[in-house]
Length: 158
Image (cartoon, rainbow, N blue to C red; front, side):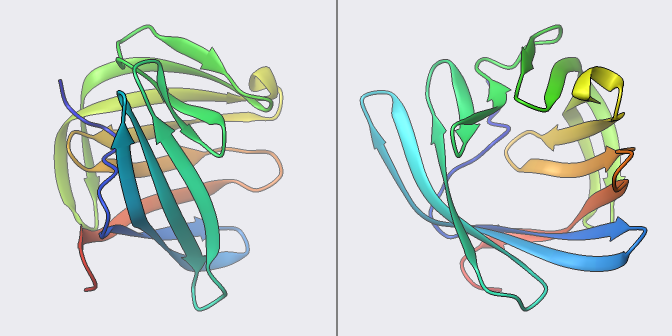
């Protein structure tokens, strides 16, 4: 089965985010990762442009991948699977989507449909490439619509 949310120390992703307020670059890094008894716990960090780093944790086990305790993806990820967070209702709509970003063309992607506040505050899609993770996100959020696209990824410091 493909890993749509890889947690390996040293892995990084750089995204471009476009909003009505302008463009920003977000870098996400896995600082450390530890596996024990079927669970992986990762210490991660992210930063917007040159602002200070923000630390967060990710846990992956047989039931889900959780970012700061919020389910990002169910395990195993299967078409039709649905879940909810405090602000979103999510559903895996496709497992063979093709996505293009500045970082390249990705095939066999999960397409997750997002309803913000049950669809009352907007909707969107997230795309996860196998072996890589999130490659694109488009949200038509009433408060602040945004487009996030993968610019680069890798291991270690670029």
